[in-house]
Image 1 (cartoon, one colour):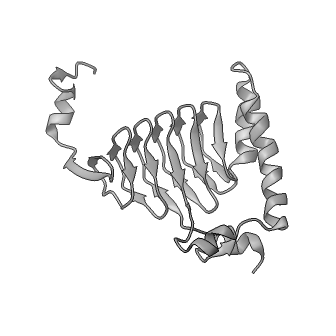
Image 2 (cartoon, one colour):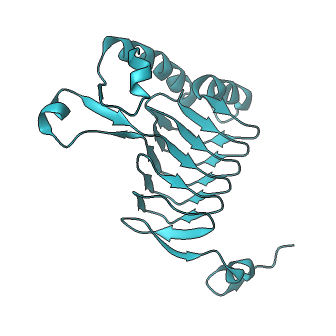
Length: 200
């Protein structure tokens, strides 16, 4: 297998090969152009995002600046919104489902390094995909670590460090992130503490 396939295999590899660095440099040029767009350049922004990422569904918006190791390994469903400073450590695949909302300063990381110091010194790395379901809300400053699956409709609280899978229809937060409760009838009546929902 070539270096790019090895990078996505889940096995240990050396991340600083000339082949990988050359491929990555091309992606970084597209990312630079995306982050340099003006707010009024909606069509240009959309076109660059589609060149940068593996998949972009309809009606997606990512507020610059966006940071990514590659971009080309990130897959967006429809109607995904991400606020500024989203960081995609996408050395392998990140899947983000339809209608997800991502707060500012969120990190989604697929990459890890061995604990063994000598391997780490030689730039050894491994990458495990991240899967985020549909209609997930990830609060500001959350960190999603390699291999995590987040189920549909779940909420990840601001500042959480998500090290393990989160089931669907859950409210989870903390460091490490833990499920606190399921989404319930209370959430259908109140939008914040004792403030009742009055939208139709």
